[in-house]
Amino acid sequence: MTTRFFAALCFLSLFLCLGPLAPAKEPAGNDQIAVAPSDWPWWRGPDRNGVARADQRLPVKWGEKENVLWKTAVPGRGHASPTVVGDRVYLATADEEQEIQSVVCYDRKTGNQLWNTAIHRGGFKSKGRQGNSKSSKASSTVACNGERLFITFMNDNAAFITALDLDGNQLWQKKITDYVMHQGYGSSPAIYGPLVIVSADNKGGGAIAAYDRKSGELVWRHNRPELPNYASPIILQVDGRDQLIFTGCDLVSSYDPLSGTKNWEIPGATTECVTSTVTDGKHIVTSGGYPDNHISVVRGDGSGKVVWRNKSRVYVPSMIVKDGYLYGVMDAGIAVCYELETGRRVWRHRLDAKFTASPILVGDNIYAVSEDGRTFIFKADPDGYEPLGENKLGDEVYATPSICGGRIYMRVAEMKDGKRQEMLYCIGQKN
Image 1 (tube, rainbow, N blue to C red):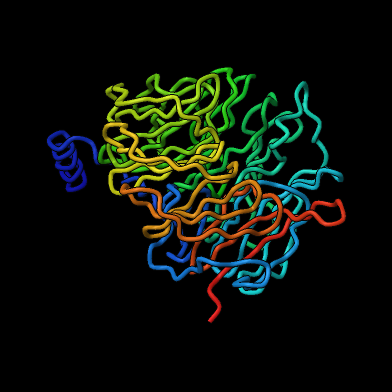
Image 2: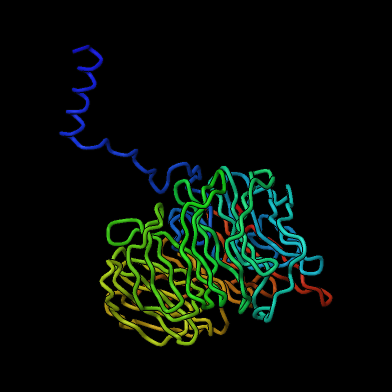
């Protein structure tokens, strides 16, 4: 018996005893994501739940001449939130007259525009409906992992995902699915490990899909029902593991974000949802506005149990979970607090405003911006509604602010001489 043959035989015996070698470990969800704690890298913030760092010194009063560090003009129109990473701020926008959808980059310290990259030119006309009057052609928020930018737009009757480098150069672009316009399109991309995950529900039959961040190669995909829906894919730790939660189309769906394997899917949502789901680690909160107004709380273990449900209309502004309580602002302007475990309404308070932007939690304080540009600051406290401040900027706000590094970045529309001009504000405490 030769030495080479003997070695091979020994290896074969070991293989038969131990079984096949284990595959390489899949990367964790945060691998290769180089963003700092002081950044706001994607829709709904670092943890995708509308919660900002608690240790920020923020003003409770501001105005045109008070605690505004800088402001700068935004070309076009959109409802996308500012994305803040490193020394830059990124914003999706659309020039509806010239039919250009683009990503604009600003200097974080000064507000100076650094670059403006056109993603799509033309293609603004849609078959059938042209969308809700409140919708925009740039309602998706840029996602950034510190190395690349990702943005989704609906254009030419299809939804697309585009990757850029930090200098605005296009790296790749993929068509997600054909898209039949109903109310509009506003699903934002989610970065997880080596993937960027996107969705595009619509009446023509949509999709939820994951692409390799570097190559743009399709990694996994699921077709969706032929129903309109506007939610974004959200990754949260629920029931002891990371789950990609997707609500709407009358379903609550859970996927493994890396493999795309469907963990479970249950009834528990209405057809059209806009809000992004939140969790306390055990429950999943879904809310929607058509055909049913509802807040619905389901178990996150796939058991199919609907814990409680009511008929409150929290259609567009996403909700917030803190210390076992669920806080939100209804579209019609009612601030509410529920006990998450039971659904018992703890308190409600009417605000003289309408809301599209989602509230942000900073420590014990909630910042909620109304459509007419007022920011209501109140305590996240189950003992009752406690106002802390009310500030107004501009005439119209649909975009959710981003709060990081001791600054509030707010997209505001101002009306001057009958013309609408969007501005990006940086608000902070002046010493």
